[in-house]
Image 1 (cartoon, helix red, strand yellow):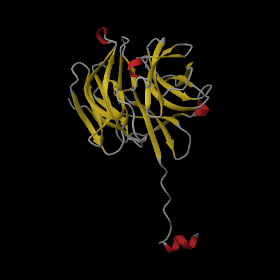
Image 2 (image 1 turned 120 degrees about the horizontal axis):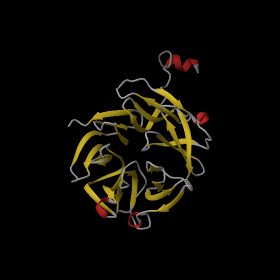
Image 3 (image 1 turned 45 degrees about the vertical axis):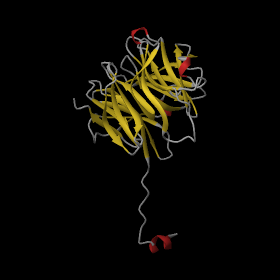
Image 4 (image 1 turned 180 degrees about the vertical axis):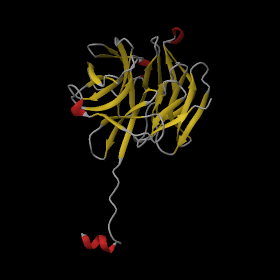
Amino acid sequence: MAWLVMALGGCAAPRAEVVVRTSPVWLADDAIYFLRQAGSGQVEIWSRGSTDGDRERFVASRESLPEACGVPAELFRMGDGRLGVALDCDSTRLLAFDPVARTFARIADLRSRVAEVTLSADLSNGYSSGVNERCWWLSTIGLPDGRLAPALPDLTCAAGGSARSPVLTRWGGLVFVATRDEAAGAETDRDNRRWSVHLGGFQGVPYKGIGPTFQGPPDLDLSPDEETAAVTVTKFDRWRLLLVDLRDGETRELHSSPDRLFDPSFAPDGREVAFSDGHQVKIVRLGR
């Protein structure tokens, strides 16, 4: 093959390794955790600072996790200041990472695989979202036994809808995104159904939608003061990061891109939001 390289003009440049960074969680003022996969290597947990250009630091791989039955599939914020880790096993195993002691503890094994998790601060219960093709649904999580029970039957696959990205409030309310439209057509990166932010358990109402509709599939995070949701959506053929006021539904755009956006995560002071474009963890300031 050396003659072919020479004929094409000298030494061939090595192909750059593709690095994927997803599931950012802004856990502390100076620490954003995320999942990182280089090329075909294993998925690992890494962290970085809150300033662009900060050095990335390795945290853990499957080999360093206790009782690891699979690879890390999702990171999530826990109410007690720890980092939640969901492992993709025969079911989903939940771990908690203490960033001060730098140790992991096993929380529970759920009864089946789930895509997303949110837990109460006292670890007595939580919610998950499951997915089958383009249909998502919410379930309650009973702890410590990991039992799952369907929630919000009007927004399930059987009812022709979908619900995903659940986040529990400190007082037990639920914020999530949902659509009543059925999935149609071939599966793609974009979901043309009409989604909106929903509130569950607020003011005695089982759930209600708030703010405008948008396309997806959307991801959501809740601000530290629990008054605003950050949502990654598609609208007018671009991916957008939106802020939705949970009091009146007022919405404004923070960022737009032709590339897919994932997993918004508020800074602890609520002044910035981190998100992933699949390859990088990026940060945008709220501005006002």
